[in-house]
Each structure stands twice: as structure tokens, then as C-alpha cells.
Length: 167
Image (cartoon, rainbow, N blue to C red; front, side):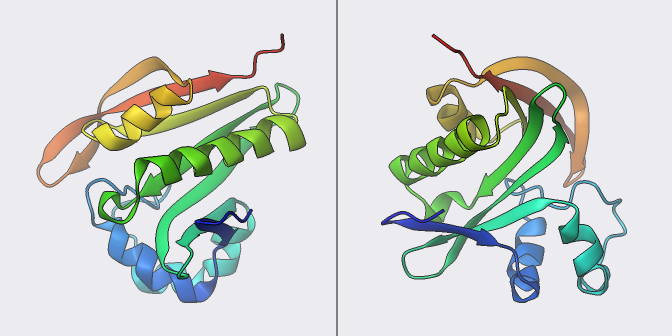
């Protein structure tokens, strides 16, 4: 996907360092499928195995600077559902750019991949992303209470979904 302001491209091994740096930032909870012993070396050594099974992308601005990451996973084609993970560094992105990116991704999943329902999760306290999700129509489905442990505290995970409506 390309746009005047952004580009969505597959994650390359050279991107792992940037993603690893973001892993420790509270608002960018990445690599959530692994346990807390995850290391940078593990990601490098297992790059092909991990990223082959996912549809993972970095989001770059028009200067080729990585401003976010996006993944599609848990596709259930019989049910026409999938999970979407999308994270940004707030300092590096404007609301209208994020809305544009999310609308493109939703269009890709609904129109080109024939998905009917998209589910995504946010760690509580990510007000910027919460506002964007609600603006494009995602609804809160539930709360996974005290689901994430970061910086000595437990945080809830909010589960949202968007269902394709046919008029």
C-alpha cells in the first residue's frame, strides 16, 4: 500500500532493531506472542520462522522513516474474521495520517480479502489509538482485566471489533 504520506511494506530483517527498540515503549506492545525472555538475538535467529507465518508490515512516512507497525493474523476464512495489530509512535504521526492508514487497511481486509469482522486489542492508556479506532467505527467488545504486566503494574487489554456492514 502506498499513499502520498505513507507506505506499508513487509518487515525486513534490517527493521528488527527499530522494532526491538519500540518493544520496551509502553504504548508499543510488540512481540506479544513470546514470553518475557524474548531477546533481540532470538528475533534475528528466528526471523524467517516468526515473520513467515504472519502478515507483518512496517509503516513508513514519505521520508522512509518507520512510524509504525501493522500485522494481520489469526485468519479464519470460514468465519471471515481476522485480528489486526497496529501500533504507532504518537510523536511521529498525525491523526489524519493514521486515519488514512487504518481506512486503507480496513478496505484491504474487507474488500480484497473478503473479511467480515476485524478484531484488535489495545492496552489501556493508549488514548490516541483508542480515539482513532472509535472514529473509524470499531466498538468495544470486552476487557481482559489486568492482562498485561509492564513497569511494575498490571493493565487491562481492551478488545475492539469492526464488522463489515452491507447496505
